[in-house]
Length: 508
Image (tube, rainbow, N blue to C red; front, side):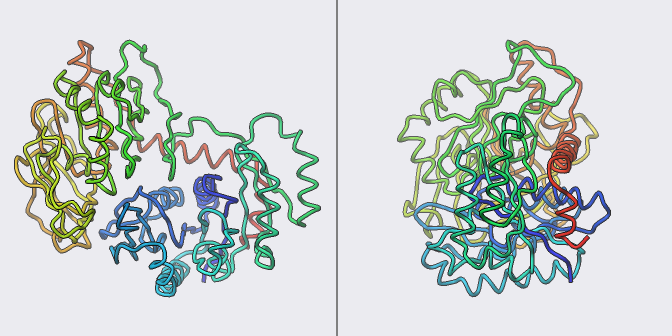
């Protein structure tokens, strides 16, 4: 069985996910067969595994850092908040049910069995498992239903590194309070990491000594605040990420991309490749002025498409999107955003809400019907939009995650769905078609489409030509950018943490 090491935090956003990713890369670089594990993840950013299972994007990134293929065992429980219906509970990559909080807590024993099964399978395949906790382990109202923090550490026999976010303030109180609230369970914590520090770490010296004296646990490193790391954020929008390209473009020649900020926005990591381009300025906004002055407006995916569509109307954003369309601004809908752009959305079985029928924005000639079956599959796609991808380009890579099926004027992409856990999306060598286009409006179910370098540059060059700018011939490699960012992150963690201490904890 594998050895184990766990990263927990004093609260959400402390930096657990990226520190775990960095440790996966560091151990892999040392020749250790390492894999990530998070027992339960609550996130709206998800991805599809090779066999069609759905899992959290953070664990996919950690698997990439470990240079192993992502599997649903790395994230056996995924919770996706969906509004009035509670959260969609995904177990081992498949939708189990929608549950409200009390229902899920009553379901804890079944969820815990799934967690143990997944950890045991991973532990038989790898030398080391790097576990990640969720939120804080010291939520005293939830300790009796915990399956992701100290319960997971105990089961895996994993020593814990506790991360505190000094940028939020009160880091020493957070570390001390976590230890005291955990009581006997704090024995799993073997060291502290202080994250996101700005300035001279020497001024922390007295505090580091005192927290060691008060808790008996050392601070094993202080990580600096990292700007522009270029990696996807699990729970926040990485709006500070900038281009890693070899040259910059003047502001007057920038393509302004506005992603409409939805309440239930999901899979916003779809757009991480865009600001890596030298001519793109990307913002997330719920402001009609931003929408009407953009070059591209993107309506992203949503975990509650109907509710987000109704909110667009409530705040007048639907009118702003239509005015932008009338001005010739490129409108793109992704997944739920694609559904919103159609004429109608039907939900006869109450899959997302109590609204049986809702008018869409009417910019695409499609209608969508929600059913209980969820389509989850990876795809290869041929782009049928003239002038986007050069002749002879390799197939586009992407994946589908959606509850609804759209019908009408479909035919932007020709797909081969090559993996799935849904009957509707089964292994089928015959192509199917996805997406709709009408004038300057485009919609698709395909996630990950902007990670395809030639497609991304093709879309941007179409906009450049509309603006009277020459197309750019150079294409940046998003895969290379991510790989370099993981290496940079690992270098920073390696430099600022006591890696000998961590290696001893991991039994290396």
